[in-house]
Image 1 (cartoon, rainbow, N blue to C red):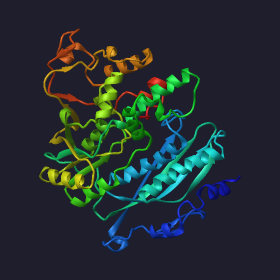
Image 2: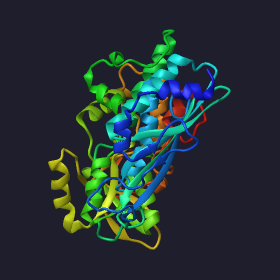
Image 3: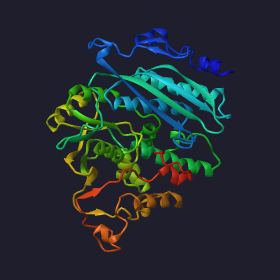
Image 4: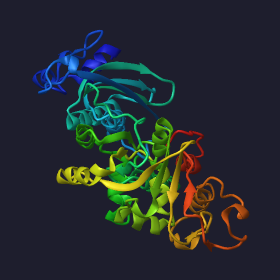
Amino acid sequence: MDEFASIRYWTANRQPQEWLRARGVAVGIGDDAAVVDLAPESPVGQAGEWQCLLTVDTMVETVHFTDATMSDEDIGYKALAASISDIAAMGGLPRHALVSVSLPPSCGPERMRRLYDGLYACADTYGVAIVGGDTTSTPSQLVVAVTVVGAVEAGKAVRRAGARAGDTVFVTGLPGQSAAGLHFLLAAAQARARAGLDGPVPLAAAADAEVDGLVAAHRRPRPSVRAGRLLAARGTCRSLNDVSDGLASEAWELAEASGVSIVLREAALPCSGSMAAYGRRVGVKPLDWILYGGEDYVLIGTIDPQDAQAAKAALNAEGIPFYAIGEVEAASVPGVWLERDGDWHSAAEDHSQDQPGLDKLEQDMQTLDRQERYRGEDKPEQRGFASGQSKVNRPRRVALRKAGFNHFEKITGESNADHK
């Protein structure tokens, strides 16, 4: 089957013409370019009162996923969800998508069908019209790149560069869930490999239901489109970012873009019961996943403190979480800090006794994670305690680095630094 026949085959009748026309699609898949209306139907009126949002994300096999961590449907779904999340982080509406797929020789018709099933499942969920793309071959790895076109009312896009001293820092969901799910999937994949099994890890591999939600958060994340729209409409949300690379990394992006310092309060960071339970089970502190996980696609932002409670009530009324997790401070040099109260344990403390059922590789992985977690904590004199002590009086604030250690690389041996 040639390229054009393949495109027609996998996209035919996926989205009805009436549905596409309602989303401003005049010419869709099948021509040299799509023709779309830039402005959605809105009381705002004319197209000139809207601005166009454009974003692209790429997922590469063995860098962002393996056949053990995600099914083909999950890959398609998440590839589109990642770009939709960027539109959400600007307060916009995702409208149209272009999908580019590079196929290895091993990717046959059945795998393509599953991939497109996932793409269209996400598109239908968020009202996105897939209007074109490209298909080509690659020597060995599947690559999926998705461009999404969105729209936002003119002058209403919420950027990273708006945080002000005194703002309340908030998050609209539970960061860390995806990383915890990935942790389970990678550990389970290794166990399956030792048993001679291949393919995606089934949820039934979990000992109980506590892991199901974590795995779903990794495989089928939910872009925060409605939250972004509500926040942008308030006019008091001064900066916004989606949590694709971990809470610490996204907070750094806000701080650097705005020229401020962001202080996160550890006691205010939300953690689900299932993530806390799984962390205890495997000896990993959920704080690691929260700060340095990623791919949750919840929103982190800053808002006028006088509107924080009202914004929380408005989002909660629509079933959207809103957690105040810190404050913005003026700074000559941007930074991100974690504020902690009282005594706390060394980041390198050994918790291997709390890891029933994990092999040595898993224990080594978690020890490395703790040893490399906090910048500037590699010498006892810098930590403020004598060598050998495990619980000490620490400073109230700890400087957070921009990125954490790569869980994927540690377990698989692949040197793919941008995987979460």
